[in-house]
Length: 328
Ligand SMILES: NC(=O)c1ccc[n+]([C@@H]2O[C@H](COP(=O)([O-])OP(=O)(O)OC[C@H]3O[C@@H](n4cnc5c(N)ncnc54)[C@H](OP(=O)(O)O)[C@@H]3O)[C@@H](O)[C@H]2O)c1
Image 1 (cartoon, rainbow, N blue to C red):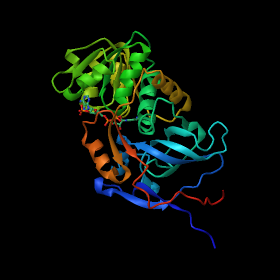
Image 2: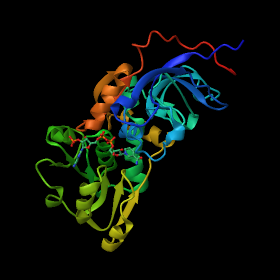
Image 3: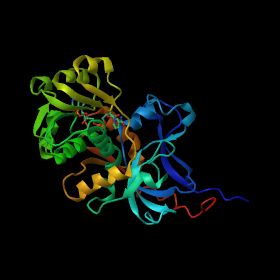
Image 4: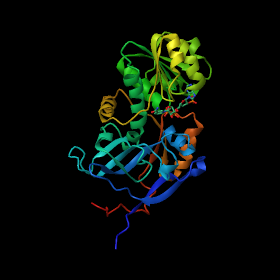
């Protein structure tokens, strides 16, 4: 008789919809293939992609991927590994691909998707870093080519991606201008922004110009107003879709949309800045796994400062640690 695999708690959707589509369910612990790591998740962060997937508006996740476990980035302890550099017991953080979710007690990643957590971070702060920080890094430096001395305008500099972007750009030696709402003006200054525009009170296009790089995390009307502040030859990088190329060509600028992805080398560079005290993740609120629905709703409602992180330890005592792995 085959022993059934052990179960784990996971936050998932079985259909697309509003916040009510999110459920905490017990599902089998995933089984790693050769070369993959089995991870015990310690904490996981929330990202807008989670509620976009839930709503059915995220093109990569269609009906055929349901049920779908939410959560893209995490801190976790390695349970099973063939990789000598990441032995069992190592605390790592990283990003999963769309095959696995991080809002679960256990998940699976490939070695190139994770790195050991630097000593400066606890497991909750470590979970806040991977997706948002890699998005900021790839947008500013890989897509935007930001260099020391350049002027960068970062929209939404107090949110998940933005608060990393402000700190990375500053650490690179750029002149950093950022838009935030009134309550976050002081935070943005503390993160190192040279100029902070309160987007509730002021219009950024009346306060700044000759921008080398606009990092657009909002799109729509904010993106539309951003063309005017770019210098000729400047670049607009957006996380929310491909900006219209004809528009960029007409005014002699470059426009890039991109999808951020896992990159262990970049995550190590980010962690080195954190370890050196030059960058700090801001976790504004912590939740238990059972409060995932409420946390996702808070993120979707907006006005989030820094990151929201879910604690995967505790509150799950009814599901024991797995002791049996099919194929192990
Ligand atoms: N392409 C990719 O790979 C990728 C990766 C990560 C994220 N994204 C996308 O990038 C966007 C930002 O992600 P995130 O994780 O940073 O989101 P987030 O943590 O929810 O932060 C969004 C921030 O935007 C602020 N905001 C709203 N309207 C604003 C405005 N008009 N001007 C300035 N700030 C404004 C919000 O605060 P206030 O309302 O209080 O100002 C909030 O702090 C999302 O749409 C996300 O889906 C894409």
